[in-house]
Structures are given as structure tokens and as C-alpha cells.
Image (tube, rainbow, N blue to C red):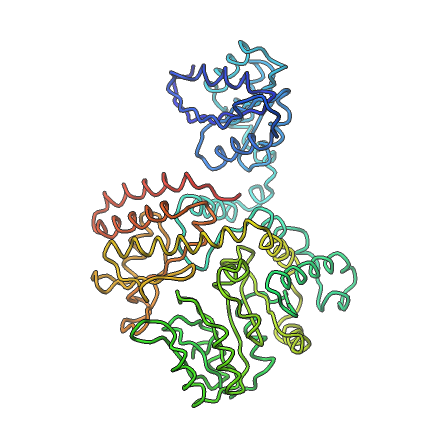
Length: 557
């Protein structure tokens, strides 16, 4: 066998298991590391399952080469070539093997158990592992064969995207507002629907040729209403901020009073911050959390609402780790004759799965983004009671937007369909379990958790007791491949550029398949990195640990 050492992923279906086992046996005792993805028996199985495992390992650079076997070699070759950077070749002779290596830089060898003998197959494996790619005149052809028009036409953008792909694959993502959407969501978002202008609503467009995008938008609307049990849904907002804008414009006039959660206590910019339009157009009063337990004091909020007499109360947060009592918020709003507007962008996935109480029965308006815990494309939606439907739709279009992004709405429809599947509830329950386990471990390691823990997907860490700030911690963790964001904490006296805390969320790592023991290990890696923050050599070692650890949790695409 080749003197060079490779990590080799091997797989087969029931029609190729005998030859696959012979290859694995032959590779034992060599310098190569062999990962056998099965199958191990002769019971009928689907060849794409095993071809995809091997191809994904090569695509994600967890393996250097792949070997696949089925009855003819054709099926596994077709399945493997669905993955970017995989160049699978179905060959029948040693010479063909050498050629596909030297001319095509093939990195997955596909064999047919009924086509080649075991003896010839082993010779082909040897040729596959020992032959080199010639490069030169073949490079341009390979680029064309890859199917990537972007790689051929704009290498700068292509390279930046590839760099981000590698970052997402290798880093541990703990930003609470980020997640990894499915290949189906990305396929819909990258579709030709981006070419279609569709101002208006299904059945009432300003442009012709909208019969197919009408189907897509109607699917998104019906699925969204089913997910949350809402009377009416608008799926056109380009973002959560634009969804919030439409709600404000639907029921408020400039100068009207609104009562909202303070950004410094976990709220959001669009909840009346002076730098945002909402803080400039309206008369804003903020409420916050109690200094005693860092949770919303509903009794104090009710007193405040009666004093302020707002026209609208905004509820929802970007950095609040406790369950929000929407029923109580609804009663407070009703008591003062105010609209209740809930921005559930962070917890929408938990609400959809029944892991967090729903605001829909208690609020006049509910908005959310679709890309956080909902695990969909970047965008926004609005839910409301039927009596507000016409007003909301008019404020979205033509009020604050023109044409909708139909490719994004298609991706939203896919996302909502995924949220209706049984596995989504299990995923969201695990998100909460992971957040609780991770926050508890960090507390054991000496860090103060704001409000003492979490009921949802997110928690804040107060760094003052350990003499650090959010900027130092965020920068240090970036060096080891762990991504968090610096964040102010309630009653923070530090400035926003060097706040006293960080925010940690578990949706993305849970999507990768991590469970409680895994996020506890991540908490320990965070602790080790912060202890070694001034030791670049040790930080480099921890970075390698992070990358190796993350390799066990592949992305969903």
C-alpha cells in the first residue's frame, strides 16, 4: 500500500459489503486510518445513506479519501457526487484508476462488487492511494466540472463563502441568535424564485405570472398559522425589525406612548432605543428586571403601566433567560387599555414546540424572525388577531416594503413545515436542556450566571467576579474557535464596547447534535481558554481541541 498516510472513509450497501470488508481488512496494518461507515450485513439497505456518509466525511475534510462499493459502483458514485468538492469516479481497471487520479483528482473511488474481482479491486485501491494529480491543464477543466459557476466567475466571493463554510464547520457557535438551517431551506432560498417580482398578496398581485409564487406564499401562511395557532399571518417582512415597524405603524401615531423592555435589561433596539426609529417617533418608557432576582417584576410593571398609560406595551427580549408570563402581560395591557405586542424572535422555536408558553392567545400582535431558534432563513413574520389582518397587511405592503422576497418566503415555508415535524419538539427540548447544563457547569467553574440560570435557550454570564469583561472574553474565545458575543447585563455600569457580560445560546450546537455532556465539555473548554488567555501556545492547543471536538458533530449540510 501507499507509503503516504491518509484518513480513508469506506462504505458500501448490501450489494458491496463483501468487497468492502476485504478492502478494510487489506488496509489494516498500513499507515492509513480507516473509518468504516458500513453497512456490515447483507440485509437490504439504501446505498445513498452510506455514500452520503463517506462523501460528507470527504467534503468536511474529516477524511482525505473515500472508497465506496455497491453492486455496480454506479449508484454510490451518483450519490457521492452530490457533495461539493467530492470527485467520485466509478472505474473498472487499474489504468482507469490511475487516470482518474492524475487527470480528475478523484478523491472517492467507486467500485462494483460484481464488476471487479477482489484481487483487482485491491490493486485499484493501491493505485488510488499512490497516484498523484497532475494539475496544470486539468485545473480549468476540474473547475468547470465542479458545477460551481461562482468559482469560475468570481473567485473572490467564492473564496470568502468557502472561508465562512470552513469557519462554521470548525468553530463552536454559541451566539444565541444564530443557527444552522437545513439543506432544504437553503435550496429553497437559493432557488430561481429570486427572479420573480410579486408585489401584493396571493390572488391580488400587481404583476402577472405569479401563480407559482402564490402557491408558495399560501403554503408559508397556512403552515405558519398551524405552527402557532394564529388567526392571521403575514410572511412578507424582510426582517424582524421590519415586522416590528409594520406593527408600530399599524396602531400608533408619532408621539404615542409605548412601554417597552429596556435594551440594557435584555430588550431590543426596536423596542424604543433612542438610536432606533422606535425611540425617535414615540414617547418611550422602559421597564426592566428586578435588582433582586434579575427577572421581570410583574407587579411593579403593572403599577408602572397604570402610571404611564401607554397605547402599546412591547414584550419580548434578546437577552432574557427566564420564562415570560404572557398571560400576565396580557392582563396588564388590558387593564390600561393598551395593545400588547410580543416580539418573540428569540424564543419562537421553543414556542412552536410547546417548550415555552405561547403569546399568541394573549397578544394583539406577535412578530418573530425566522432564523434564530426557528432554524429557518433570515426574515420576519407577523401574527395577529383576525380583526387586525387588513391593517397589518396594508402596513407591510405598501406601508414599509415593496416587493416580497419570494425565494426567502419559499425557505420560510420549508422551515415552517420542518417545525411541524415530531423531531422539532425533541430538538427544542434539547436546546433548553443544553442551556441549563452549560450554565450550571460555568457556575461550577466560578462564573456568575445572570438570574441564577435559564428557562430557555440563552443565558448571560456576569464576568465582574472574575475580573474580566465581555470584550476580553469574546476576543479570547475567538482565538480558540468558540464564538460568543459580548453583552451588557442588567444594571451594568460598563460601556457597551466593554460590557460586563457575554451572552451564550445553545440552538446552533444543539442542531449539530450536542447533548448535555457535550455542552458541559464546551463549558470546560471556555474555562480553560479564559485561564490561559495570555498564553498563546496554550490557546493554540485548545483551538486544536475545539476543532477536533467539533468534527464529531457535523453540520446538517
